[in-house]
Length: 171
Image (cartoon, rainbow, N blue to C red; front, side):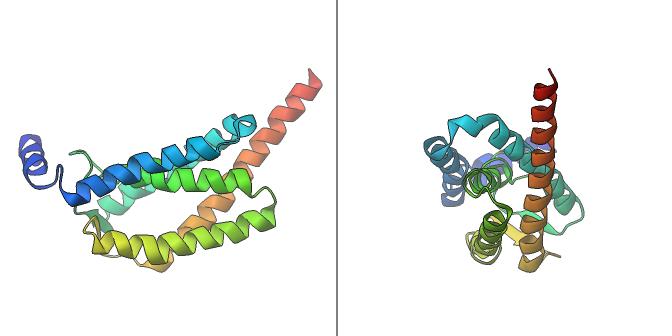
């Protein structure tokens, strides 16, 4: 079965226009991130991004498993096909928001803007570009997901940073 999947991927997906688009989606966000990264906050920002990657990847696996969506074009012939989204586009955008919008108010406003852009522009574009198909999923679910996950992860990271700082003060 795996051999058939690899043959199909090599013949019908690898190096297609959609595949090249996924490559851009994988590489370009990290280039942008490296340019705009505040190096004084690198550990905190990477912690935030790591949590986003883990949650996004796990929820993507759940979505595929329960047939909420599927990937038409895969970047690699492995499961799931959302590598550029789960490990690049989504976490890098979240990290930039986390880094540049330091107050809760500005962070939530920027989160709503990002959620709107991803959910109501980016996701329809991904469907149009034949990267993904939604089976039992709606854009509004993604909109809510982006906001809720951003708030929860920021709260967790801020709590961890506060604990770390208080431990340093005690030493």
